[in-house]
Image (cartoon, rainbow, N blue to C red; front, side, top):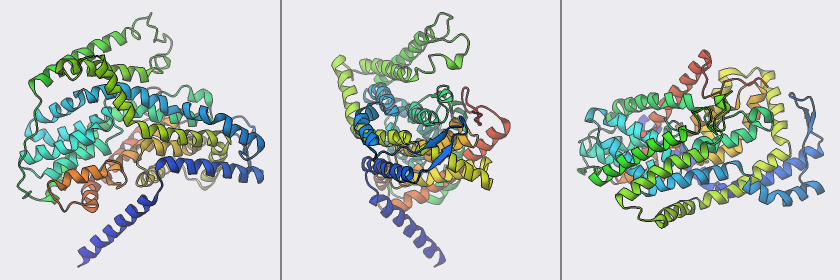
Length: 507
């Protein structure tokens, strides 16, 4: 009876989260509301003559009133510029051109299937988790390819298909920030971080690289693969018990033509890397900085590099497999990719206004300085502050699924705030990425959550939100704990979290 009461309480909490989340406006509307709130707040704070002293320059900062004559003029004159100048807009669209060709030609799907169908049975769980983590290089492809494939593979091996689905889902979603390669997420979040850091220290912001969290994320791939495997084999699958649904399936192996295409794509990738290296390695390389490699033009040109690294192998694969017959097919694949980005472009319009207004009014600086002074006065600093931020960001992620949408809201506030307390923008971004990834799999509002439930219901029609969340919760907890421990180790040892990226900010 006690167990039933606990289960009932859990379901009531989940139902409450779902109801509250469903009542939230669309992210486009949400940013429009935030922009209006900034306008009103600027008038209130300006009327109250709120001001702070900039600790970096000693100047007095006042809030700019957007409802004044000059403010209204700014709103109208800057609207187009705020949209096209929204930092992640061009970054995301350019990288997705290359990723779109690699995905729509079939290369990404073939790579994922090839990875998980060519490993020994004993390593199947690890391969699924690892493949899921690596699938973030193709944006959301892992959700629709690897998650159902995990269920199929486990069913074919006589194991519980929902355990395979859970392992893949954990890798794809909870490990979304980790990768051995740079993904579209790195420049997307990086631009927002740079923009937020520039409100406090423009010179420092210019030194921030998209690779700011790269070292930490490389190690995370292997650590999360191990943890995800242990959680699946020791907790999730035993809890699910023996599968009695009777559905036996066999994963579709990579065809000889697809193998030929992948070999061609690999050769194209190696050649592309070789050609690009000529721009950086030789002393005469145009993207080389002989004095400081980390400050070289190469590191500030990663967006076109990512575009090229996906586009050329994707094109070669498509030509070999006959998915691409002419330049028209490439153009159509790019066009289809851009069409799928339509909602993001609309989101960028309202998000761009919010970010621009927030920066123009000085509200970010005022909140950062005031918040830093308050936290300093109560002595809330150190790892406790970082962990608290991770929990706050994770909680927000339960209600707002888009990683870039949340960071567009949080970066203007928390990046300057943490800088005032002596923590680097790179560290703040890393803490956010940990929170965002680990709670994806337990958020009913995550865009692909309903799709994963649909995949699961193929094997068990009783699967619902509560079933999926209770299945994924061990991964969320384990990944969070392990990532926080890694963060502690990094902080205590003083290791850089990425090229030129330290824990502390000394402005």
